[in-house]
Length: 94
Image (tube, rainbow, N blue to C red; front, side):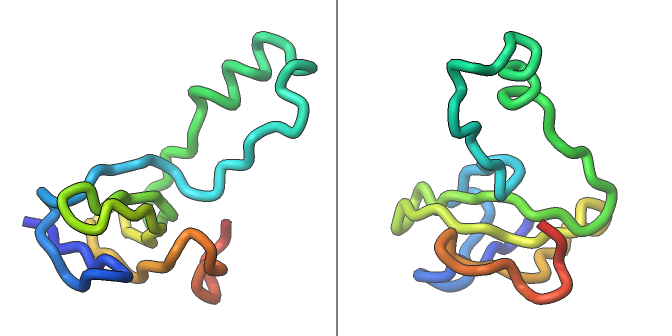
């Protein structure tokens, strides 16, 4: 079982968390001006990174706060966790 380090509560079992997908997705400033194709791209198309990947998690069975994690998609090892308001750790591209 995967163990995830919540920045507020500490290490907990994966079953306490909900996966939120890719981190650092920026909402379009003027979505009403996007074409249907561009809006669909924003909503549905995400990276499918092999290796280190930044993603969002919510501690749904604990503090209910969202945070970001850097996880290797091949080994499932979580290399870092950081609060949504914080910068990503050094050396990790956004």
